[in-house]
Length: 381
Picture 1 (tube, rainbow, N blue to C red):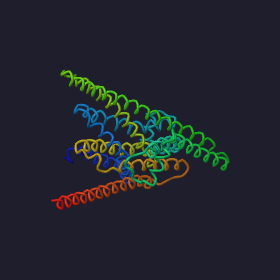
Picture 2: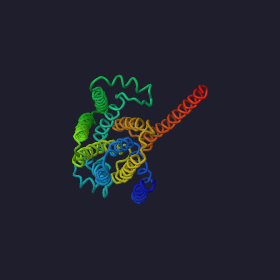
Picture 3: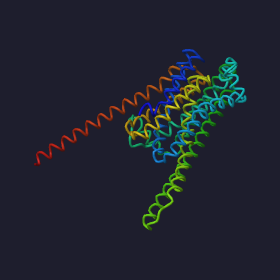
Picture 4: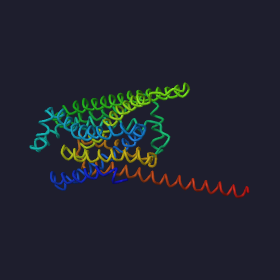
């Protein structure tokens, strides 16, 4: 079962790590390994969401998502998107960006270094919005209740996450403007760059969120119509055209999944810039991670164990929040990539252990409850 589900992921991992060693030596191997773990940890909630929707789809549409969807996720978002970000930020063409990355690493490194404030501001704001929207939502299951309960109450204020994100961006930009004047105005334009790029990241998040909401509403409408049609058919004794209705609903599911997948890909790609600027290592690491996310989605669907580890989604979002802060800090200060990669792994690991302990407590409580019931029955007899 494991080999059948994760076989392709294992093969891609082996090839990717060998390519990393050949390209960047053991240092490249380490970066790709960190990026793979980072992508898997950040996208675990993506796999959970995907599996929850995918299990409602027919085998045909599942196959479409797991084939065409892989091409879009691995080659589109993880390979092309980082190049596009660098090309736009460095004001050069995508082909030129790739050529420089492969043939003139010193020049490429300089371009990425110059473009880093805009990349970090854009990504930091995008990731910060994901984190804020998560912690401000009132959830039945809470991991760190002492933090999440008061934040959920604050989240009842409309547009609070947008306001806080803009305040953080304004403070960041003003800080760099002050530092520029203290250094004789050498970096006087950095504040403007940070401000514009941060607003662009915020707008991107709102647009992606709007599209996701649109497709989600369409999906709910189609499912409701399908349910009504089935009820009418049962009452009249007629057969409803299930293929057409299921096909329409599944098509909207597929569109919704692709938008969701693209939005979840942003955090991995943007977070990768906090680890490395090398697009080859980035593509290898994120590509390996994306394959595991797809395999994990299939595994969750087949095993039906989506709710076993309830805190993993929390851990992933706290990791996203930590990465957002790290990206904003790296605009001015250098942070070692080992620290960046370790933060997400530690938070995910912590949430996993917390989930396991919770499951054990619930199992023990159920065991005591069953023993109590048996005692009551015995005494009654």
